[in-house]
Length: 64
Image (cartoon, rainbow, N blue to C red; front, side, top):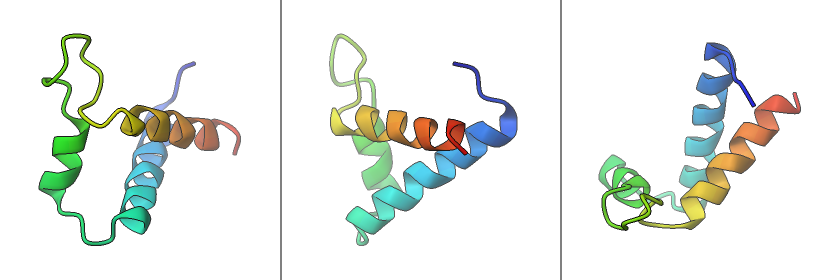
């Protein structure tokens, strides 16, 4: 699965929009903390749901 620059940007935008809608009090620090890959040895995000949400955002863009 390859995304061009515009698709990658749109995936990021949709991902952050969904995060904001779910956690509307979140700060950038909250988002970055949940996305951090430094907590676990397998380099998965600190909040495992973030990976699933990211894949959903990519899928939504590719289905456009």
